[in-house]
Image (tube, rainbow, N blue to C red; front, side, top):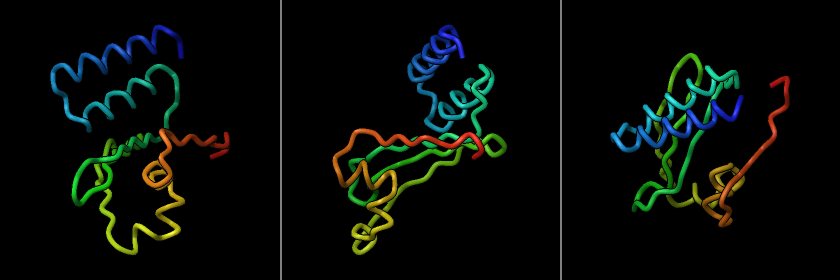
Length: 109
């Protein structure tokens, strides 16, 4: 991926937000543009915390053959305290005051 590709994708994101393109469409567009630039993206997961009384987060998952699906994370009671929730990538962001979570994906994955 060249610097020009990065600049074009960045510009497209900025322009898309100005015309109020929806989150799902932006995730689709970025993922498709990454693939077109030669990045060979198989799936993309984007998530963020939400200031909401029921949902603690919102997420978008893009897969090459499916496009983007939107999901909300609703956690209540024992779910919040579960080991699975706390050890998940989102749990690390939500409960341990981390700004990001990065993982290396093996080449054969």
